[in-house]
Amino acid sequence: MSAAVDGELSITEEQQFFRHLAECLACTAEFEEAQKTKMIIKERIIRFKAPQTLIDSIMQLTNLTPNEILQ
Amino acid sequence: MDRPDHTPLETPSQPQKLAPAEERQKQLEFQHEAVVHLNSLYNYALHITMNPADAQDLVQETYLKAYRFFNSFERGTNCKAWLFKILKNNYINIFRKNAKEPGKVDYDLIKDFYHSIKDTRVDTTEAESDYFHSLLHEEVAQALHSLPEEFREVIQLCDLEGFTYEEIANMVESPIGTVRSRLYRGRKLLRTQLEEYAKQHHFTPDAKQ
Image 1 (cartoon, each protein chain N blue to C red):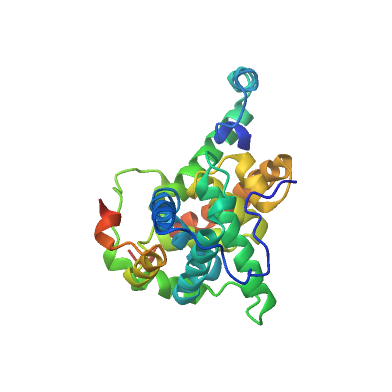
Image 2 (tube, rainbow over the protein chains, first blue to last red):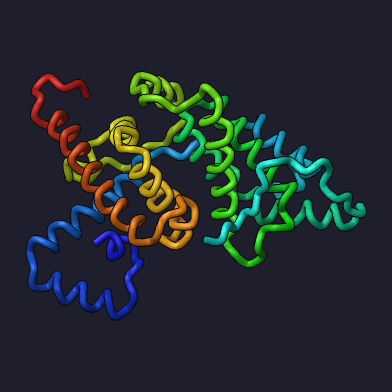
């Protein structure tokens, strides 16, 4: 089920999986719920921007000026 | 099991000196391969440390190590996965060995933490009527953090960072089958938790908007 949600099934496995879904309401419901859960995580968790001080210190590490990185 | 980072625990006395042109080449490659993942590493570090200062230290330490051992990065493989593995090892070394054993999740801290940046975020559209979509960011974050670590970890690596099962298996040093079952069980737990929050939204008459 997870592998189906994450697109990790082989082509054959995927065909078998969806053939099964076509005739199994319980699995279809579960598949949809699992997909929804994944979407919620992706959409709802905020991504932060790394603070400038951190960016600067990593820049220093590689001796590059921020301008060089931005290009 | 092969370890992509080959990061020795001991720091060698001095990394080999490169000629300026070579050093410059290394810097540029490091920039293109590794520095571009700075935001991802920072976000992941925030989630595991729950503390911006610790997260910064962790990311900085990770990049220091990555730069020093950049030669051992297998070219053509996923550099982000390599960096995450170093970050995870660093986290275990720095935080687990010190008194900084990650304890129970402090929900107030999570709340404060997210509230403090609320102004800077951009809300996605609320048009969907699905009850799940009424969930707030803080609730989803809280639900995620309420999971046992081994579940939270794989969900984050998979859903937020987009790693493949194989890459995750390598990072958490477990077979792919284990990753798959942790994802399955973790998502189930998460869903139960989210449904709980969603219910509170809809069925509590005096719920705050």
